[in-house]
Image (cartoon, rainbow, N blue to C red; front, side):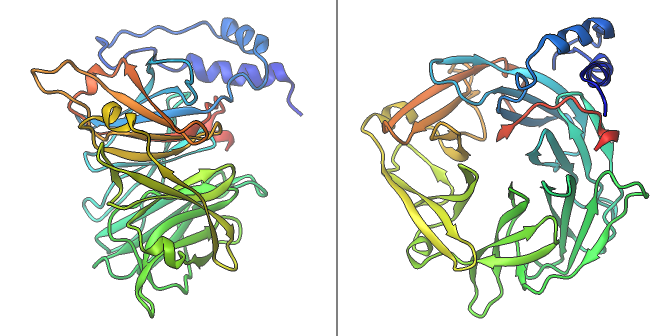
Length: 378
């Protein structure tokens, strides 16, 4: 087994390769000496780098920029984003994850090819993956992790007409053989209406899909990363009366946040609900809480249009805009909103250091844990 110093040496080598440039730097970079990094890592407690982060991603000039802030900021009104790295990408790329410190960058179909890339925001490393072999127009992918087999897998589905997923392919990372896509069978006739973000919880990837029935309806499809089997979880009748849901990780269990409108929340929103999956086999959900928003909600949210990000380990629902205010008559500002379930309080946290992305769409992901392992050791 490797000693802690050996692990620290590998991690230090990785960090020393990273550029310390900011998004607006002039190209100059500095490298921290490897010996110094080793000593720093050895002095840190083993779990000091495992605090969950809110990962911020945006695309500017065909480059993907990744930054983060602490996920739990109870006593702060202002935080500064920590810039990580950037990767080349296409304008229509999307981020999948994070899952155990990694994200997957996918490219929509271009020149009959779609090539995902695995990225480690902590080290700045990227690992190009083989092209998904398909003649279809649309490809939707999800990143999952099998905690038993300790393997990362990517599930990709293809469709031509939005009405049915034609092919299901899986790629396993870290295999000794040359990585390649494998076709797998799925007995569930379903489709995705738009490029869809899934969530991986305890070795299962969940995503919202349209079911071809009978009857035709919206449901949640789950993919077991280890067995590579699919199944459907139906929504209850009361849940179905509400509009689209956002899947979240609630205390290690699948949850769904719902509003009376679509997926967005505004200052005029009166309430929303949090449902938690009790028994997947019996399709049983429990309405964990029906939230009547406080009177201060409208004043704090004002004219912003927000989207659910997820739920933190301290029972706070995180919401954020996809775009930031950049009107010339208004000062630049970018905020994340936290609603505390227990205290029924809402607060707004300003994120500084994002001025370079004032014209970009910014995506947010909870539960990113920094990991400085080398990609070749996956």
